[in-house]
Length: 274
Image (cartoon, rainbow, N blue to C red; front, side, top):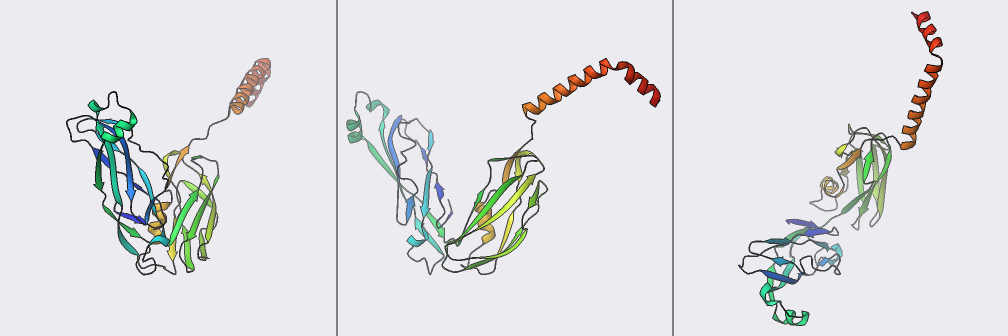
């Protein structure tokens, strides 16, 4: 984890490796974050609780963290800051010591290991982007997509938008737009996509933004869209429904019966054509 952005959740992935020759039982683990960093959901329990770790075994956890722009002490003067994330705390006991012990006794005899987490560079984010689209696309079946752009600054943001073309989709909507977003407001971009191809990862048309009023010196709205918006979607082949398949089967049977019943007429027509 090298860089995080204000008001955007990011993931902390601590990795725990056992170096002792004894088997250990994890009683609890948690991340103690420092202000202004906060956990997105404090109610989630430890993901390693109850696990037994052996020599050189590895355990991983995932925590969603967030840094609010209003919580940064120098939000108006500094656009990048280095912040200490906090500590990773693990409570454990040896496996041979847990027999015939209740939970209270295990908590009293538990060992606690504390690990200092590295610092992270926090960049202030002037723009937030999100996309609303189905989980997958079906070839030759149109679907709608909405891109929402949120102004997180106290000034008006102004953009030129260009939708890049894609060989995998036909696009309906304004491919070039000029618009402004007032402070704290959201601007929606609505399009209809018609998928031409199917595949595991079909490239979506990319919105390309050009900021006419940069809010921050380091602000790169193109990198923001690339970081937050999906670039691909799974495309499935269009399949005929069971009703259509049944109708085709009925049509085939009916046609064969008609030809057998009027075989003489068809023979005459073929001879006449020849």
